[in-house]
Image 1 (cartoon, rainbow, N blue to C red):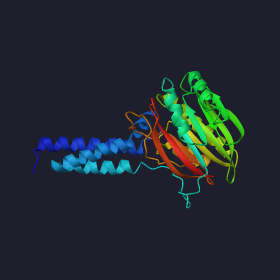
Image 2 (image 1 turned 30 degrees about the vertical axis):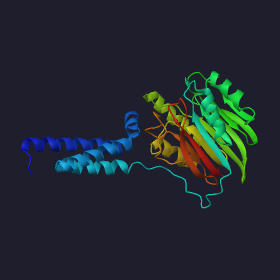
Image 3 (image 1 turned 45 degrees about the vertical axis):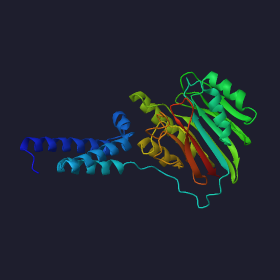
Image 4 (image 1 turned 60 degrees about the horizontal axis):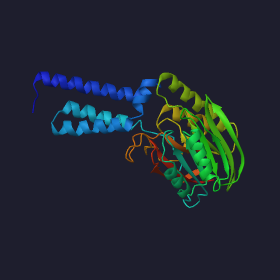
Length: 307
């Protein structure tokens, strides 16, 4: 079927615009607006694939070619610095659970029950308000006697609880956001665990602040040679250039599934992966998964780690 000239011209224009969008998503520099758009690469790929199917059925060949090429080009960008899987999948000796609580969340008892039921050795919490801090201390103190809690009112309070002996706990401040470092004894010796909540990049200034925090975190990780685990809400997707920069300069690699979304969690579903567990060589994630946190806008993470 041949389209009239005007329709074909418009189709070519639409196909060209689609390719321009895909090229921008794939090759734009690490700036604020491209970063926001690139966070949703998986959704862009689904959109382009749907357009390809629709245009093929309608025999709109220019649109089909552009949409199929755009979907492939975008999917090629969904690449992350992933850690190698361990050979011995039964070697895990440390379980870590990650909870972004959502500061206004009032479903305290349900969250506490879930934390205790996780059977995790280490619990990492973000958005810990003074009210949440009181709830966690009261409910977890017996089972998790080693703790560091830094409550805050601006959604950047943080807490780390451990039932394993802790050699030391230190609070670092990266660009105004607290980061907790704990040294835990693993099977092969000391293991450092960082609980992190990076700034949400909702503006240009916050985007720069988050990137600066991740660079500073990389410096903390590489400052000592011990095996290291980073867990938390890093506010960057797995394929973002900020994540690649963090991993390249620190030796960290992603231990959890890089494409499994954790935010925003609505009815148990989420769109983008911004909560992560990362490990340096010598530690490896054997198993990992996500779960619904009652009342939160994030899904939780749980990871079994061989140390």
